[in-house]
Image (cartoon, rainbow, N blue to C red; front, side, top):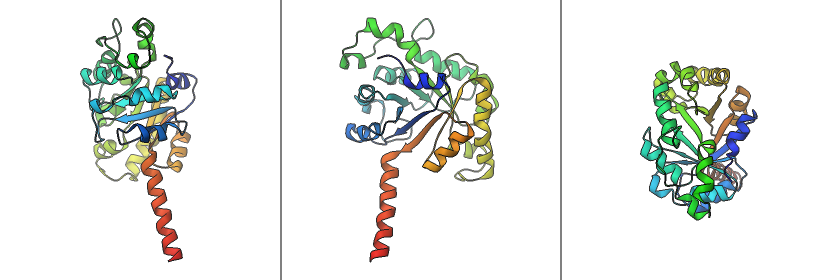
Length: 255
């Protein structure tokens, strides 16, 4: 019940695969979960919904044996707490630039004495889980994904990785492109070189490197480069885009 499949796979040196849905809809998310992914990425940073829209989505993922991961909007202990209380067992925190920020993120997610998270996990009521069962195991269940999206973060990568409780260091390609002076140029050599070296640097620290990709080909490349926490992005959007492309080709061919 309280074992985080993602943490277990990473500890064994395996790769955790995930995907996201951009809408706070149980059916849409159930379709994504049914593909057999290891984690469901619930994004409150760039998507159209916030923490209050999480509702029972993390619980839905838990029931299917899928790890619910919530990306909060920033380094805010209250938002991290809310995401966990809603049922997330993995939290992604964007724009981590140094070890102090990494420690703050971890402490916000952990109960005392390892952290300072307040006690009131509401998701347990929907699963008939007692606090007596959950609370002693909560800290061990939580997986922390820290996003490296700036030059400062890159310079401090090893120090960030050394923070106890930092499980995954996640490269944010779009923001890194901006930081490298090639904003929007996702195929620029500067960015491609950075992303190729990133997992090698992270691997030396004993942590797992993460990234989000937009195609099966990109996923294969990321895995070959050494990334072990990989999100396919939005499967519903990708599927619809592919189907639309195929239908247009069919229409052009058949008239």
